[in-house]
Amino acid sequence: CSMIYSRLLVAKSLLAEDGTIFISIDMNEAANLKSICDEIFGSANFISDIIWNSRKSVSNDAIVSTNHNYTLVYARNMLKFNDVKNKFKLPETGEGFENPDHDPRGKWKADPFDSPGIRPNLTYEIMNPNTGEKFLPPSGRCWRTGPNEYKEFLEDNRIVFGKTGKGKPQLKRFLSESESKGVTPKSIWDDCGTATDGTKEIQNIFGGKVFDTPKPTAFLKKILSLATDSDSLVLDFFAGSSSLADAVMQKNQEDGG
Image 1 (tube, rainbow, N blue to C red):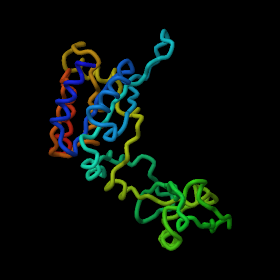
Image 2: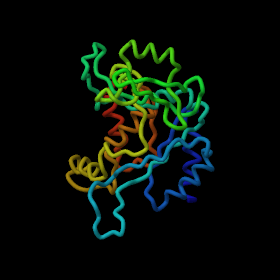
Image 3: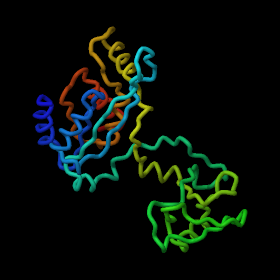
């Protein structure tokens, strides 16, 4: 605790006002680290605890096979971060987008038409035109828009009623829109490599195991996609195997940063 405390104080002093810090830790010290970060950065500046599925195989000799690591994410100043949080997005991959009705606007996904909260002006009956069945928002929720905006969406062929046409209303989200806005990240990451992948990357460079527990560049590039743009400054306080430097150079090749 005393070792990491002073270093995190320095880390905070070097962060940009709208900057973020990602700190990877295993379960042995995760609780202590969270307490220290809450004190140094302030609990109000906590963004997320990302669970990385760092191991796919099962350790049969363990009581419970440990297959994840934690990554605590904090903002330097949440008020400043909120000004740029719309950029805290992942690139859209296009997965799950289809165009079964040959909409000239291209591929789309069906999103729920309801939203959190209860607002009387957004609570009204919507009738499925195919079945005549009437729907109200789910309990504790309301519709995304008022009845006039809903009618405009319907006339614009933006409303679908499930794959069979017999369900509740859903709103088309087009791939072109998602590509411009980006994708909100989830707190569980199981699509960006494993610790084994990181080790293989190092072995391919050095011909053997040189560093313990190197991160795969796919995991680090996902962080960079969220937290940086093409002219950001990135600092790795514990350089280790320099996997982050490798990931930064890969991103620079991809986007000219």
